[in-house]
Length: 227
Image (cartoon, one colour):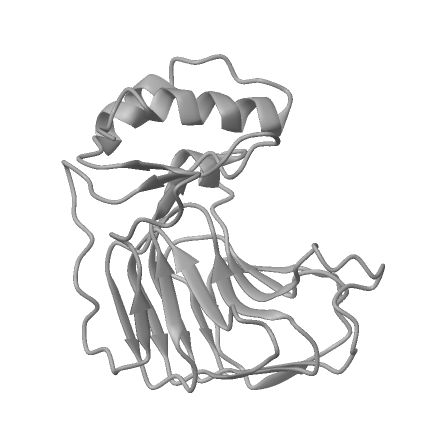
């Protein structure tokens, strides 16, 4: 078995998964159903190489249809992650994504045991059902361009052509920070026009270096929102 496993469709069989050294599962397509997995990691170190800055995700949501598309606010839609058991004696992230947008995301009845503060931490959730999980879900604003070397984050706190919808059927284990001011060091944009941003992104040259591309995306984003 190779890791990370790329889940692009329905994957529901009860299965015990162990032995991964990096991210275990990448959910990278629309209309995915990921259910009934037991993912176990009994290693005590944060990373096989001892690098505590490198995080490992049990389940990562990541747009892969276009190279580096997650940094350009591309969207994954209609994802169900339900009835999974994730266990780590160390600091593995549970269900995680820092980049991209998500509509109709359903996180239901997942049990997560980990030392990481990011048991469920997802940025850019436009609409979701989050209920029955044993841990708090933190929802962050959408982020443009990742975090390029030497630069800070660019967050989207509101859109002009869509909305952060209230989380449906949610219990109290929700920390909704999508409209929050995250850091004085970062840039926070409001009334962001996503359609116009994507139109301009399609006109820029595609660089070979991801850091250069992310820095360019951040500059383009400033044209389409207000600080």
